[in-house]
Amino acid sequence: MNTLTKYALAGLTALGLGAGAALADYPEKPINVVVSFAAGGNADIVARINAETLSAELGVPVNVINKPGGAHIPAVMSVLEAPADGYTIFNWSPPSMMVVPLTRKVPYSPMDDFTPLFAGISASNALYVRADSPYTTFEEFLEGAKANKLAMGVNNLGAPPNLSAVQLATEFGLEFKTIALKTVPATLTGLIGGQVDVAVGQVASIHQFKDEVRPLIILDNNRQPFFEKDLPGIRTVGEAVPGKQAGVWVHGGFAVKAGTPDEVVDVLLKATEAINSEETRAKLPASVGWNWVHGPDDVKALFQTGIDLYSPILDGLGLLKK
Image (cartoon, rainbow, N blue to C red; front, side, top):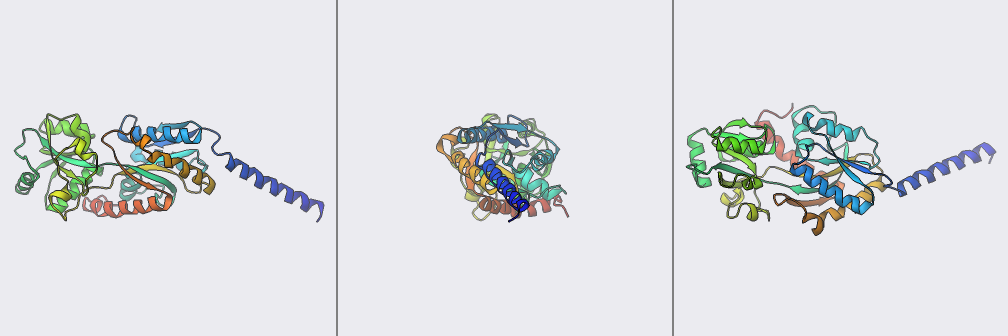
């Protein structure tokens, strides 16, 4: 072996050891979690709880960075433009992974550009009327909605409450005049003020408007443990009318950029197991449901169920990109 070859091999060996050492030291600096919502909402609160648990497991600060606006695209791209080294994590949600990519051309692919770590948070919506509404049951509402084109309040077109309303209309042959009122609280305020006849909001919305609105039905197929705490005695659509579908796909969790080294992903997967602990779940808002799915393959399979559910609903709205 000549001298040049010897030094070349030595250099490659050193580079290999250096790379291995770098991976073995992960993490050695703070990690950022990018949230595509403003501070203060459920998505932000849960992301901060999860970040706190991850920090305790990894022994480094895990900071939450809020990047709202721009149809979630700026937040997504800030993650994809960062190195694939595990130091930038995306707090994914239905809009960023399902609704936006299905409705417009975006510079990313949820299935190809991310390695998801877990899904945890889940949520459900409920159908509300004013406290003095003539509709006191879901059955009375169905009769009224078939006889009259009711004004339906939602927060934003294409958002989960709107998709819940569309799914409800499709299942029961109804037609609504849909009015978007920007936020769930504004939607229920509009309901109370008479701007709309009926509204869709999160199950926990009842706590803010308890004496002014009446929940008629939970727009879900299956009963979640927190339903009885927030809306005791209120049925799900699946319970009220077996065979009818309701319950728009609402999940969220952490993901890293595709191409992140397997060794780093393994460290994160091991650390995120603690997020499903009773200790961490006890810190969650009472309104948050929990459906734990862990590991890239299983979470991507969950993504596909969301795509399969949302696509026909968005197509019915004329929002599915062609």
